[in-house]
Image (cartoon, rainbow, N blue to C red):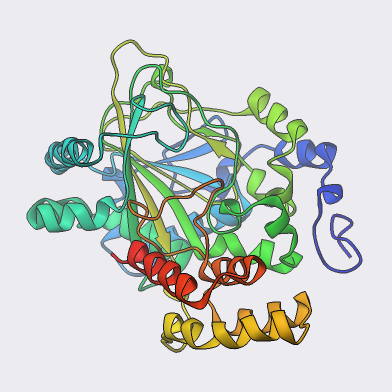
Length: 392
């Protein structure tokens, strides 16, 4: 048994060893492991997309390249750079113009607000920029996403029929850095929730999504491109570890940053320890389109109207809790079979995380209502309001 896993098959805060982590990330990427790469910088393989044009347009050679990328993301550095992913950056310029218009429209509509890691006004974020760009200017959308390299790296990690989503992040001079973290799925959960998932699910979570960023501007190091810790995705209890001071302190001493040119893209395993950097420049408006690509398999077999199910079940559950003495365990089991227990997907413009990393789930609302003794009419109203916020 892996000594990081407790005898019951779960990770905990006590599973984490900073010395084990240091030993794991203290390795070097071998040039022979990345034969298609143009070079290695700071332990990160850099691929020249224009030089790979013929490989990407083939079949057997394309698959060999994708296999290499998958090995890098899973067992190697955990991150790769696609240099010149957009050799022609005109589509990015056109998209940037659309994004800036969207930012201004949304500010006028809402009065502006805080980004997820900076004070109000320091950064701007467009949630669901993929849909917004497509509806605002489908011609620009087509030009941006007709990109064989981005398609290939997405397929390399997730297989065919992946689901693309994206969020634009504009970080102005003075925009603060993030703390080290891992990403979606388990990276968006609290430590307590993460601890409730067995160790093999911690292993599974990273292979369900791919993180990426397309540089819409030049990003010298002083502008704060993403801080990265190669090989850190290999640390199995990392979803429990990244919140701990010892790991965050080590990250700040050991991370690397690569400058990016407009048209470059970086992709990484979501379990890689990473953080957006501080924009220390005097005049660079750092703009990236953050890509979050999901496996085609991230969905259930059947479609259920869980809202109607919750509306039907709640009066019964309220009676059982209040009059029949049902315990928390019985209640949890029944509600889990009925209500949606996950925060995503949602409309983050209307349903932002409040007091945590993810919005309240339907299940959490249901259990909270039972705990508060919420009247049926009030629960139904809250349930309907929640459903309205989640709509596209």
